[in-house]
Amino acid sequence: MTRRLPWLALLYSLGAACQDPAGPTMAPGTYTLVSVDGAALPSPNRSHLENGTLELSPFGSARRRVTYRFGPQPLVHEASGSYRVTGTTIELTLVESGGHVWRVRGTIEGAAITLRYPHPADGEAAERYER
Image 1 (spheres, rainbow, N blue to C red):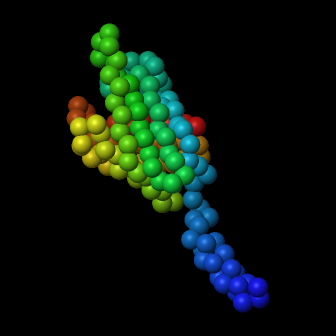
Image 2 (image 1 turned 90 degrees about the vertical axis):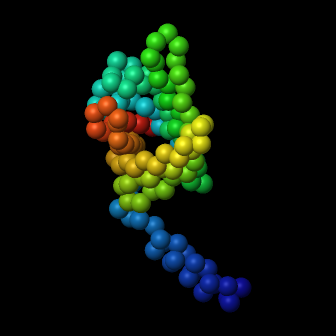
Image 3 (image 1 turned 180 degrees about the vertical axis):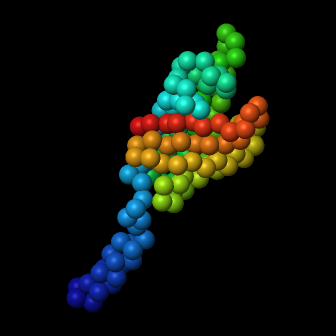
């Protein structure tokens, strides 16, 4: 038993050193889309996003599911993959149903995540998700 104690102390100190004390307060869970480019949902906006969720597992897997409305029929778009958090930055690598790999970065502010990515019509899109 006494031979194991130094190893346990070493493992504990290594684990504590790997944690980022200035890191986000964000935890894995389900985040709901609340705005696109600053416009609250479900009011019309340039991308016609109606609702969405971002699910982050404790094991690094991610799933984004959004619903677009271009007419009477909604279009559900889903992608899954992985995520990584470094400080207040989140990086997602998601595979869409057609096999397209989508890499997107964002920021974490408390219990909110903002994803930013190029928008074909006018520059950049920003989606804000909250717990």
